[in-house]
Every structure is written in C-alpha cells, then in structure tokens.
Length: 438
Image (cartoon, rainbow, N blue to C red; front, side):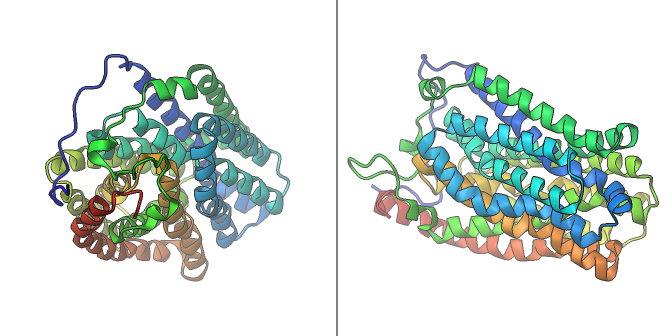
C-alpha cells in the first residue's frame, strides 16, 4: 500500500542486540580517515601551485588541469568502479583504492615534468574514483536511515577537512622541505590508514552489523529479487534532479578548493605558505558547514522529508548572495567575513542531496547510486570548477574569474526547485512499482 508521499514511515530507533554499538563508529572513523587521505592527496597540489609555476613555468590552465584531471577521472570511473564495489565487496574495494591513490601520490613526488605529474594525478583519480560512493555506502549500511543527511554531510565534509590538511600541510612542507615531500607525506599517510582498515574491518563484520531498515524507508524489491536493477538509478525525475543540482553546487566548492590559495597569493599579496594556511581555514569553515547543514536537514526533514529539498535550496541561495558579494568587494575585513559565510554554506547541499539519492535508490546498489552521484558531482562540479576558473583566469585574471564562480549556484537552485516539485510523484512511483521493478 502506498504511503503518504510527503512523509516517510517512522524509522525504528533501536537495533537488534547482536549489533555492536562500537563497530559502526570504528567503520565511520576509519572510512572518514581514508576520505581525509583521499582529499589530502588530491588537494595538496593547490598548495604547491606557486612552486610549480615558478619551477616549470606552467600556465593557470595547466595548473587547473592538474586538479581537474583527478576529478574528471573520478567522474568517468565512479559508476563502473562503484558497481565493482557492490559486486566484488565494498571493504576489499576500499582497501585496494586507498593503496592505489597513495602509491600514485608518492609517484607525484617523483615526477620530473608536467606530463609525468599529469599521469600520476590521473592514477590518483583512478584510485579515488569510487571511494566516496563505496565508502559512504559502507557507512550508511551500519547506521539507521534517520541519520542519513547528517552522516552524508559529515562524511562528505571529510573532503573539506582533507583539503584543509592537504593545503595547510602541503604549504608548510613545501616551504620547509620542498614541494616533493608534500606529496610523499600524503602518500605514506594513506598507506598507513589502508593497513589499519585491512586489520580492523572485514566483509563478515560489516554484514554482521548491517542495519536493514530499507523495508521501511526505501524502495522495495520484487518478490525473489536480490538486487535492484541498474536502471532504477535514473528511474525517477527527482533522483536525476538531485544528481544535477548537487553537482552544479559543487562547481563552487571545486573552484574554492583549487584556487583560494592562489587567490590570496595574488589578490592579497600573501606569501604562498601564508596564503595556503588562510585558504585552509576557509575550507575548514566549508567542512564545518557541511556537517551543520546535514544535521539541520535531518532535523527539519525528519517528519516531512520533502523539506530536505527546501534546505538545499536555501543553502545554495545563501552561497550565491554572500560569495557573489565577497568577490565583488575590495580585499579586506568585510570580504573575509562574507567569504566565511559563503564558504560555510557552499557545500551544504551535499547532506540533503545525498540523503535524497539514498531515499530514492535501493541499498543493494547504493554504492553504484552514490557512484552516479559522484559522477555528477565531479563532471559538473569538482572537475569543471578548477579548469573553467583556470581558463577564465588566464584570460581575465584570477580575481575577475572568481567573481563569476558563485553564479553557478543560480543554476543549482533551479534544478533543486524542480527536484522538490518532482519528489512527491517520484516517491509515489517507487511505491507503486515496488522500487526494483521500476
């Protein structure tokens, strides 16, 4: 029987006694730690931009391409490798991916020119391609559904915190030891965490602690069906609009990740290490915002899930206003305040849109669903942002290029509004079709 399309059935707050209360948090901590490593390896490059520009004479377009190649590779490979994770084993996939990106990061330290560094960055993207989707699926499997937006926001905030550590430590290590050591340290850290993951988490432990609450809160499978069909990844307008709206909003985050250190270096005349530290502070603010926005979304949408769309729209609107004004005013205290507010909400849509993707897809293909989400996040956001901003910077100057970045939020708002309108009918379609048969 169909449920009220604007409200989900209440989620049980207790789990069977056999399920450990500690193990889920061990899973979250180590999976989150590897996400830190993921983004430390990815974003340490931003801290060494000035050194590469001086030593190798690279253009802003080339520097932007070194960032975008990772996100582009992640976007292209996210879905097929996430599907492998769903079929082969999510824990095994996590460990292999972490080893690959860590070794590739060490390879960046050995590069002798732009071509070799670009190839190493490509391999980082191969290793990281499905980590966000598979890792998030691992985390959500051992926690109750009513925590989805909070957990998604907190998990994805690891990208911001990892970027903070990568940029800040990268800037310090580059000044003190040379830019090659910045890459080497990040790679060693990732290998260490991969070893801990292999020692403490297994497919057997994950299965024993799985919280199976999709019977109440997600699409249903047909009788005798063990896995949802892949076409259900796009079976409703609402889930497609969540992919697109969330991806467009991350164009802004991707640009900020890549170019804030250089912006402070050029527009404010700061030394590279000081610019990296300041940029890291703003990225930290972004990560805190992702967590807070996720928690707010869960509380607002607990009894009326459609409200999660409303919070995403509000977060994008605040980003548009504050960052739009921030990059239009002169450098100074007012600009810093506006940047702080804008950065706080810039990636706040990840919690609500991620929760919507989880709600509109079945757990059996959830890693693949988040792989699809990652595809849109990277192709529309994290890959497009750095390279497009770099191209504009070569033509107009970086300060002018950054003024255009916040306006992408307007497009995100349009798709999120359309998603909110489509959500009730999409839920009704899933209920009527039994989810897996759609």
